[in-house]
Length: 219
Image (cartoon, rainbow, N blue to C red; front, side, top):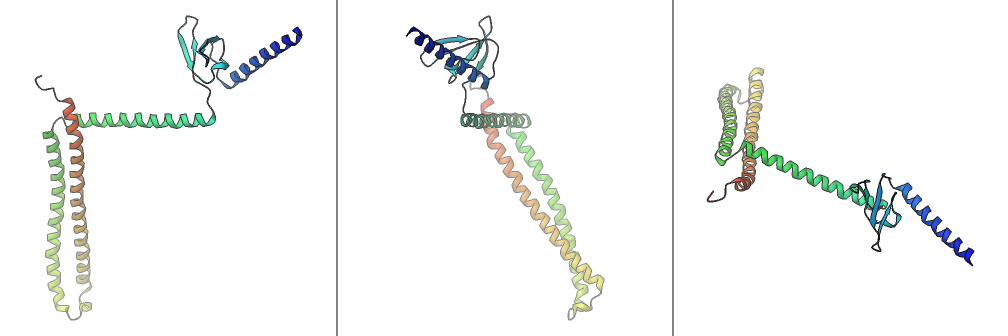
């Protein structure tokens, strides 16, 4: 009977050692003293990863007793995939937050107050206005040229095909050029709307930032 008990004890020790060996093979081993509190509340220590704590964090201690590293619980493939997704999402969020802070700092550096922001808006719109005016001047010239061309074509009103080729070509080029100028003016007017929208959006954020950095009343 004693032999059977010894055999059972030996078998249990063997199984426990085999389990530890198997778990250790799938986990990176860091040199040091492993310690953890298992599911039963027992504080365990070992010179290698502790099988009873595969479902929880283990600390790896230096000889001095300070924490050298922490080993997380063993994860299933699905748990690892979920953790990677979570970490990626957190990284993206941190990156987005950092980008926002950089943009906010850049905005405050460029526009320390509303007067500076208003002045830059005014200058940006003025530049577009100059371009639009130049296009309108060109359109006026083309309109006058068209009048002269139409006057010449008046002689061939009954049969425009008899008009000289250079006159018909001038008429066609004038029509195309006017269309180009009108399209360009339309694009620049749309640009004015985009510029105003950008400055409006900036102003909303800037008002929040100016409030945050404004000195408290009485200081």
